[in-house]
Length: 313
Image 1: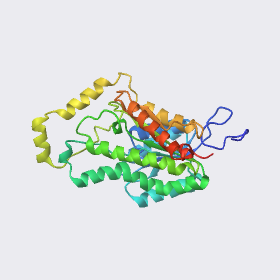
Image 2: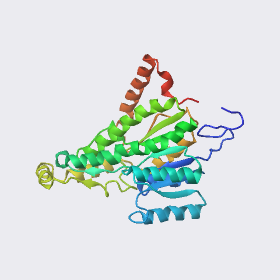
Image 3: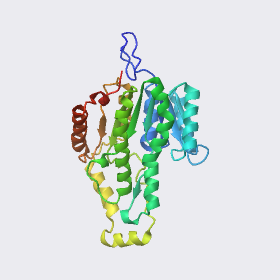
Image 4: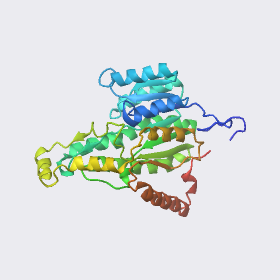
């Protein structure tokens, strides 16, 4: 590290945060919308990826632009549909053309589905996997060549505590997809380390206020199968929602997820935690992940690949 200026992602020696160019997917609402505002407030140039800026997300894009003007920050909506490779490629190209580089990628895009697992068609499961997992591969293939060429950067994966914690029923397609994304992120962390690219994962718990995850969730298509389950599990989904809400403290704040991401960007490369949990309901994921991540660390040391546990400087 230079004694005059920290050229790696994170804080400057004088205590400030080095301004970075950040791309966030799924930034029209929820954690994504909170995150782009928090990052912009921290002084970064933030590209807020959203699909259909002229249609369904026109208001979200307008709100982001208005926020930038009101708070005098650099927050820019960019057309980005994570299930369309051409859209992803065009978005990344625009970011690089507009800002000259990309320093941080935040994988936030995702979609929740609710209902008895059997009632989802295979195509519905594939669609859930597409949005929550394959989308990250599309974006990675567009962004990572830039980070590798710079030999510096940060990839943040916004996952879910459900991959390791308590998992209530009727959310299996979403939980399975998030688990797939988590596994992909773990492998990517090692494969990017020698390029100097850092990886951190953020695991939000079941926030029942301040987001639209449950309200905007998809539902199973096979009504006959869903009805058969309803006969035995009447009102189960409502019960799950109510009991998750009862577990969480009254002061639960989804903005804590955005602040965790801001903190990761501000932390110097090589010092970032591999995984951060933000879980008001405390579903147990932090305990289980601590074991899994420790085993991973010990295994890499046993096979002589300890250098892959942190990014090259």
